[in-house]
Image 1 (spheres, one colour):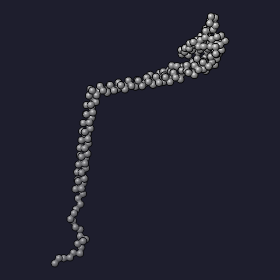
Image 2 (cartoon, one colour; image 1 turned 90 degrees about the horizontal axis):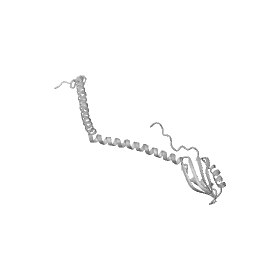
Image 3 (tube, helix red, strand yellow; image 1 turned 60 degrees about the vertical axis):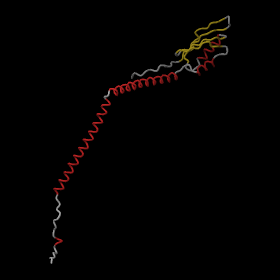
Image 4 (cartoon, helix red, strand yellow; image 1 turned 90 degrees about the vertical axis):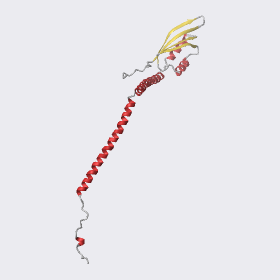
Length: 193
């Protein structure tokens, strides 16, 4: 027969003993293994990147690639210069269009100022100067035409430089010089070039 022990549940049983040192050594070993794995991964990654850098350096230092790069750079420079020239031409074209003295409106206005007995034979413009040559039946028509031209916008002065009486044909030939107000046709270049 076996004895009954009423204190058995209260007596401490020592079957499993928790060892802190084993846990610390295990954690320490895991940390060292993790650091070693991270170092190995980084080293592998560095090796792969070094291979890519070497491949790209080989391509970049290839004489064919260098020559192609230089050609492209030269074309970019030429394109930049060409773009600047086109911009200057567009700017100049706009300026010329804005400052165009002889326009269709001006010719129409000059025509409307002509007396009935006056005919133009020559019409030339150079810069701000306009010269009109023509024939009239009398000197009064020339004076009337000269005076009416002064009323045109942007006309600075009108001067009849020559009147000839052609008695055989019964008319007067004339040369009339007109100067327009100052118009800056050539736009000043900026000094930043």
